[in-house]
Amino acid sequence: MTIKKIALLLGLFLLAVPTVFSIDNLKLNEHLDYGSDSLDGPLITGSDAQSGFVPGKPNYVIIYGEGCFNSKRQARRTVELYNKYRSRVHFVVIDLDVQRSPEQQQLVKLYYKGYIPHVLVLNGRGEPVYNQSGEVDSRVIEDLFNGSASQ
Image 1 (cartoon, one colour):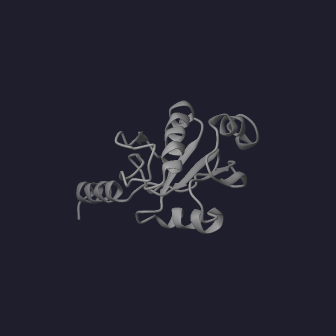
Image 2 (cartoon, helix red, strand yellow):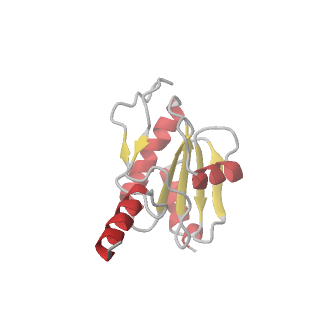
Image 3 (tube, helix red, strand yellow):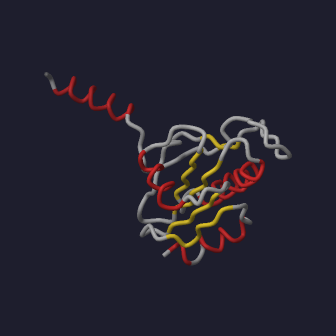
């Protein structure tokens, strides 16, 4: 096999394997009904929806269900935080209504308490600095990003 063929095969392989190092272009589902538990589809989409924990910087994790109006409101806050902190914080979006990656399964197993939405902030060493179910105000998370989660 020639070097060109090997390089081409390697390139195709790398394109087919989802990366766990970044999640980009988080977007909120524009059809969300914030006043009901309607099933509106995935709340948040992005180019790497199977991402897991990335060491070395804070990680924000949201665990949600598609038909929960509290999750919809937290999803809106999540995308707002992403737009402000994406260069400093790794965002992990876990939709309980779809198949999850092994990395996401591990996060669910370790931290999920059975209630949605669930928000988790891990510092760069993977230690939880916030781990609660229910909606959380963006200012609480921003304080963590600027304080204990940044360490």
